[in-house]
Image 1 (cartoon, rainbow, N blue to C red):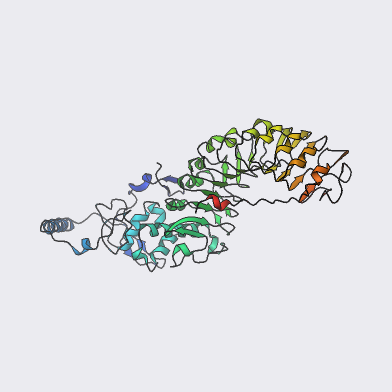
Image 2: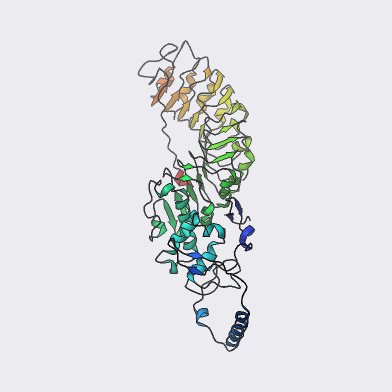
Length: 486
């Protein structure tokens, strides 16, 4: 299992173990409180310890040993803070809160205990940098009126959320909705937060004015977080700044559609999210090779949207082999090749949108071997030849878009046997001098479009649009939430 990631002083992600034992820059324990208009500050110990203090320390240790042998208990020990992971509250004094070397140097105040605990997740230097978002989050946290009764979980949750807020709320005024945020209210009541038993399971910040780099402190929520929705925000993480994705191992939904997340290929970290059901990354700033191996272990994936991502190869076989995949949106991806080479491999697909690519060849007869398929868009490709009569066997098909291709020949009357069909788009093709079969007109479709001004004979009570571009209706609205199980 990978260690937690933290940000180093230069802003790069590193393993937590990479900094926990590095104290060359800091000569004393977190503490030594001083006054500061910005909140709490810390000062380093200066010079060597005087000899009389060493002697005094020996005396105190000896005295403590004598008390212990006599069965006595000091007042501090009686009020000791539970160790990290116990779920106890952070009291004003007591035993280790989990910081570096805390086993031998216990915190002397509530502040020290919280600081030590947080340095398991955040580099000390950054936590003390009054220009960092983590300093702002820590400073806010220490002012919480109920902090003394918070357990580890709430300290972790509130600090993580505050870090997200200060890191992405440009000028503290770019967020559109922030009801409850950065207040003493229970974090489970903040807008966009969903909890179960006090633990954050969902974070929905869709279209909320987030700007900048989404912080890796989100990994502090990894124990319970199931859904993370960041779509339609001005987030600009690049490559290594996306490593937090691989740490959120319990995610069932990850949505960063319409963000500025940037990577050469789909981030490999996503391949670690083996419980993922829904993955949406359409129109993000990803490009390059489509590495299908990333999806090898995503056996729970049901819904995948990669539309608008410009790949330089065709759709890999690994996508068709995802055992539970029901919906794939791969429009405008620059894919090439023939549909026959991969489409029959889909087993449970219900909705497949491959429009605005460069697919060529014929519409496969083997489409009829996918009985679950109910929504298919192959529009604006380079498909040619005539439509196969086997389409009539697809009795579960509800909507079929084939416009914007190079199709020729007759319109098969067998399409009239597609008893569930409601939408059929055939316009902007090379189908000429034919009539729309009465079997299709008798279906009473919600939308039927063709080149019926000059190429296809179709009455106005049959065809709903004869001149491209025709309106594109979509009647299917899959209930994605039902896939999450919470």
